[in-house]
Amino acid sequence: MRCPECDIRNSVAARNCKECGYKFKQKPLPVALIAGAAGVVVVVILGIWLIAQAFTQSDPQVALQTVAKRVARGPKTPEEAAAMRADLDKSIKDFLRRFGTKAPDALIAQMQTALPSSAFEVHVFELPRGLKIVEVDTVLLASEYLVFTTGTQAKAVSLPGAEVFDGARVINDKTGPVLVVVGHTSGPSGRRPQVKVYSLMPDDIHDQSEKSVPPYKGEGTAAFSANDKDIIMDVSLHSMGVADNVFLPLPREGSSIDDEVIRSLFVWDKGRFTVRQDKPKSQLAALYAVTQYLKSAEQGASFKEYLSPSAVKQIDDARTKIGPSIPGFTIVALKSSGSG
Image (cartoon, rainbow, N blue to C red; front, side):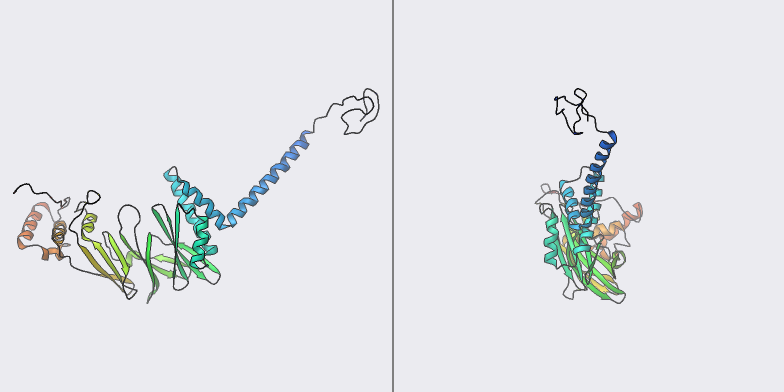
């Protein structure tokens, strides 16, 4: 550029005149040039972010780790808790579809590295027919997944209704293969046994528990019998009465009652279980029999043998005044006072 003072030509990039030292005024950069440079920077940053996101989404271990950290921090609202639960469920299934063919110990080790050990615990149970049950425990919740493995491919599905896993068997029934799962509920509400039945399809399951498992109630345990098909269930009689709303729960820690354990045998036959139950023999059983006959003469007919003819007559007389059913009662223990 030419110096306005001494008329000497200088370099375009010169800041001062080489002859007289005159300081040239700097021209501002064109707006278009600045905008173009900023655009390039934004594109580069966006590209790096998209690559990172694609890598995270394509790597199920990284995705599971990201979701698990959010779950471990805890939700702030019920809506956020539901969203976290859904995200965790999806990320676990994606992880199992990628790595579900691994041996149980290797699968546990790899999965546990993605899950904070302080908040999560992983268990894997190997079954026949290339099946695995994966249990993921977090705080008071447990989730069960069934993994189908065929060659190098794996498919993972949730086991609906199953909570804490205790055992499973595959039964080759005439109607098709079924998976029978035995477990119990989680959380502070008591240990209620669970029996679930799922029909096995090539790469999916169907929950058929409603038609294959008779209703049961109470707290206790369930386990497979020696034939690996039938189930033995031991349930507290007092807890059965609590479930019926006719006995009150024990009021506090350390409270006790002269309870009785009722054993039931669930026998597998033609696609469903039938129940054979031992008859209770305790004094509490007599009280329970009274509640069942009070509720309904027809449904409580099997309990009449526990009652004297006088007791049956009193209840029947009351029923003629009140109606066929006598609802809204609870049996409680009273402390005696003196000789009264």
